[in-house]
Image (cartoon, rainbow, N blue to C red; front, side, top):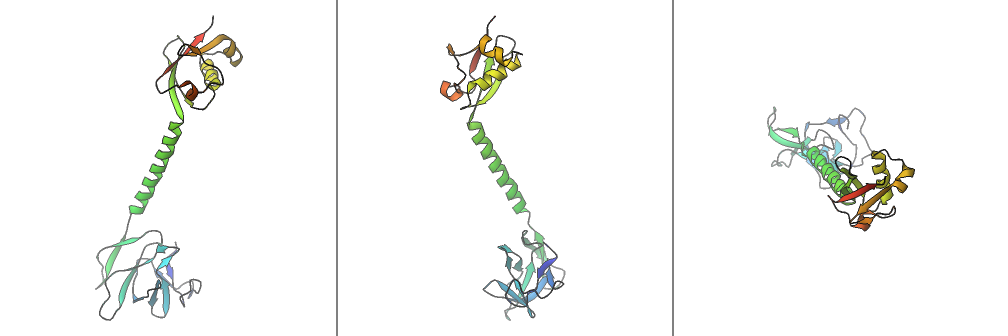
Length: 200
């Protein structure tokens, strides 16, 4: 965030040199990088990483004088990649990488697909045939009581919930389904057909 990385008077993150004193994103600085994660530029210090995100990057190998050219990334969260020679002598042009965004989108899709697969694993889809028209496709949770399906199926055929228990029988393998039975307990699997017998 912001226009760049603020200069520090010392190797202390809170010791800012001033609000208007910063290294702008993409600028090339001549200085020396230390092994403890700091970069010395003139009389100021710059952190090479903020909250774990790299903000300063070496653009060319050290010279004989052990001076280094450092390129700052465009923002702490978006790494820059060195692509070509810069406009000035002995500088390189940095370009923003887009791979992090693609990886994040891919990771979200994987999580979504995994959650959908877990959800689908807990459901069973089957047909209810009432002898009127085409069989209806229903999907219920494996552990859900069958009374929920019975009410929905009766509602589909305009049979009230109170009349449903008295005037309709649901049959699976010639056995009457009870309201507290579950799809998993009955052994219903994908594509099976439950018969809905409407009494006259």
